[in-house]
Image 1 (cartoon, rainbow, N blue to C red):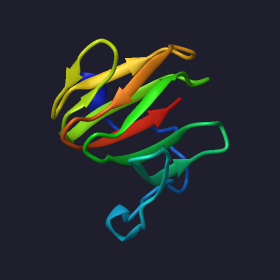
Image 2 (cartoon, one colour):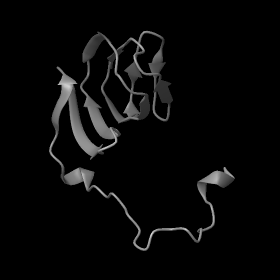
Image 3 (cartoon, rainbow, N blue to C red):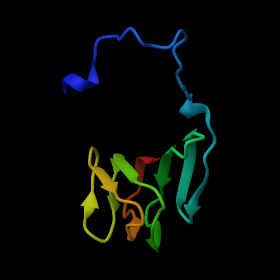
Image 4 (tube, one colour):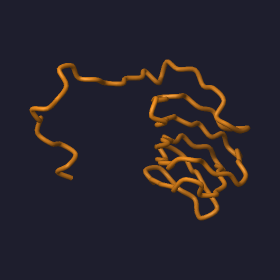
Length: 115
């Protein structure tokens, strides 16, 4: 855990750069499939993207993959793939091009990031 809070280094930029999003004020948009809604938190020039995804009860996405590494954290509810059902606090990382399904029986809120 010590690498999370490192002392300030002398080679820091003159001005700190932060990316802050007031996500509560963002409207829900298309999440890539029926029953999936998204709020875009980050769309960086280097390809990193981050979203809050609302998965409606019963939503399902058939087999698919992504071209980047996927990081998924369940914030609320239940979320499943072909391997198991994940609950609040579960963290999943998938390698690029890993085929998977996605869905929720009772609804979910997830944080999703691509790197």
